[in-house]
Length: 346
Image (cartoon, rainbow, N blue to C red; front, top):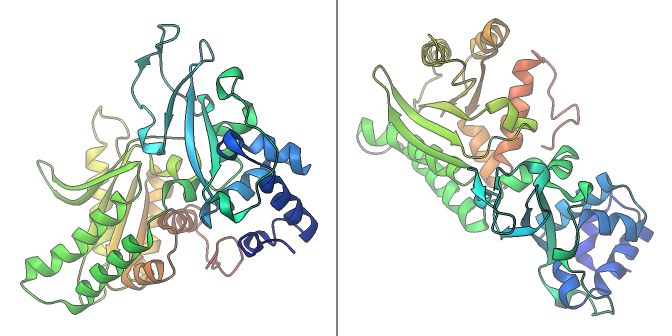
């Protein structure tokens, strides 16, 4: 029988495959415990790289492994940088210290490497690690390939238990509605800014333009053309409505107007995504207007209510999964519950 930690992989692997995975981990010692890749796991277990990617993503989620990112120069193939967070991957061009070429890192130049987080879970074995400097990036190990295989949201949003607890406490302050009108309004804005800053590639803050106060402007520091990140683009606006009654449908039109004005003239499509976050659930006209604006000019606006935030925090859910589901509901004009249909986890 395999260790209890690996039982979370049931559904991805059968019992024999899980036992083989346990044996694989058990036979790693030394540098090999910190040099686990999708391609190695795929070869060791005789499974596809897509399945191997999902396995390592799940192992990361349950705390068996941690991930770090190695960057290779696309010109000379030398490993030139290793970072612990995807947010630390350079977004600006820089000079490779090996070949002195100026390079701009693409997802295909970044390899995800995993390390056992707790070696004591498994019995030590005999394998030795390979020299990361001696080989080029295997295509199936690149960040690009792994994100295309799915699971991108988990890499970009993974709060700690303490951070989820803080989110729950901040939401309780919204429910209590104590203090001045400004203080009541600020509680939802503060929660929103904190929530989106928990995503390491986002930078969120309230801003003022020449014509409008934006409750929360979110900058996507690493614009990758995958999943929800492609939909939201390089930046987006959030409007917060901490009202005790159902918010007006006019708020949807207002946000669409703000985004459209930002995109007007010769500025191109600066903003293509927006969110209304309200304490109370929005009216049915929210979705109708959102679908209309998407069909008209491709701007996607979603609405998230307080109950959905509470469920997200209580269940320790993934913010990006929630945003992706709601965006798809608008873009497809779906009347089917996508969670009920099995397309998203509840």
